[in-house]
Length: 115
Length: 179
Image 1 (cartoon, chains in turn blue, purple):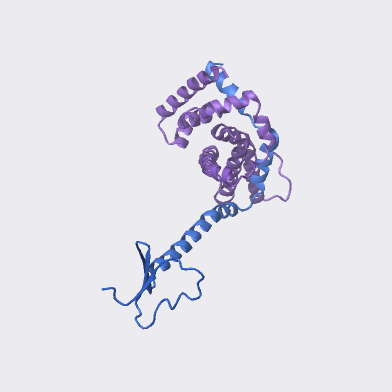
Image 2 (cartoon, rainbow over the protein chains, first blue to last red):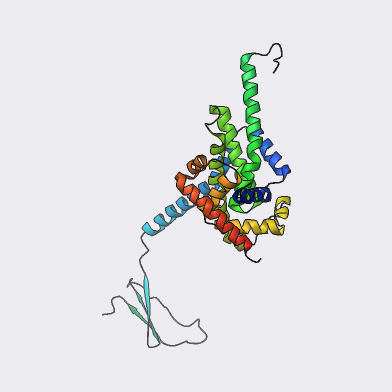
């Protein structure tokens, strides 16, 4: 026996599987009637992922495609002075501060175009 | 062999066919397990890859007759499956940590594999280049003809010879290193 053959022989013996799983695998292979079932089972995670991605894509495309509602009020802070401007000139935004216990500062309400 | 009365030629052929299949599967099972264990370094993955390769062989045999070379057929499938299973395990490893799933209990095979020498050999095999490892396992360990091994691996005859030679030298060197 050459050194290479001895080396291979040693490897073969070291990797030799126990008889019990060997027999079990052989028996199962000979008695299994349908190989397609495990193949289908393997496709389940991939299918779920595709469905999830499709649903997410549809959701975001609908959300992004929808126009944002127009702003009704603009509120700006100018050196501590809060200015609320409404596009509707017909009615005031803030009626009175009577319900408030303490004033928090100056509120200037301007209707219509600031110019 | 004496043929019992009443047994038709067709029934006899089917019976012989089945016997040949049984013998082939029983002969291939330990060899495929050895090969996939050397490939993956993991007894559970080796069993799964071997099971799928043998099941595919049985299906093919029953539907279309035996392949030209059952060994090459089964080893080629086992090789692909072992690769995919290792890849899958590597990809899923971070998820397993994330969800803090406990690792499965070690099988009796894994416990057997935990013997020092065995574990050291598997670790050494993992350090070989994949192509070299496959060539050594197919040709050296399984005693497959060089031409058949070259066909399975999709390389030339001279390339597989070189790979086997290189793998033996490198593996011997790794095993000589102090543990």
